[in-house]
Image (cartoon, rainbow, N blue to C red; front, side, top):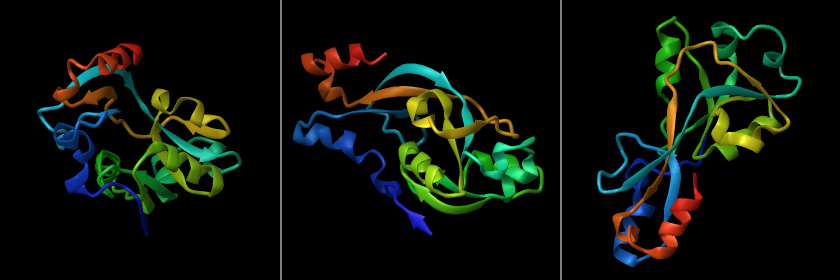
Length: 171
């Protein structure tokens, strides 16, 4: 099984390290329980998750049921290399389980794998933007909460003029 995400203990290291080395670092992502409480957050937009497969995949034809969705191999996306999450809980509630073929650390890599294989993935629709060109996008057959995409930065960069300018540009 392939796994290219950050290890759990390093999930926030790049932003936390800024405090010590003075590096410029900002990140666009989702706040979760591992996000350091010291980090500053600016909400950008609310997004929803969709399924993606390459053109011609079996899920690109007909109704995507929970059973059809669950039976496909998939690439999961996790910064901390976690294999299980809200999708698994929703499927488990219906007696289904998904098969994880790979775990990657970002949606770009997941979509690239989808384009080259018969693997399915789940990605945020708006956040993925032009990366979705060439893939078949479908509504998930399970209910999942929407996600809030945010800009994160370390407080050390709060007053930095270049950082402030960049934060104002990112909307």
